[in-house]
Image (cartoon, rainbow, N blue to C red; front, side, top):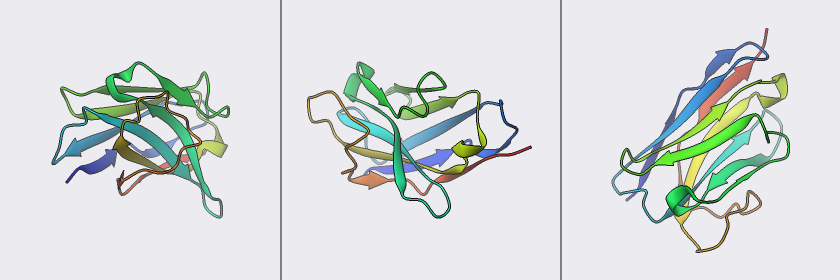
Length: 126
């Protein structure tokens, strides 16, 4: 059973940076597409970024393009989300999720994932 644990969240000032980690256990991440989602208070869940098996294809929400970068290292069984130039509207609980790779380019519009982490809070405020 694949288990995911997010870390790296916290309080940061606008314009600052954070790197979120999604560490997997119980199974290798090899063969899985991984995504980051977020949910702000009073709002629905939003796909932020995703990366396919092998890391050859990624997708990003328009709101984070050019500021967030997703990456993975299957040898370390970890996926990261590097976030720079953070804005107040990035404040949310961030979740990572995994599903078996479908063999096509991943899309943040796909929200059907089999495994979810517990989330990590990101607060952008001065």
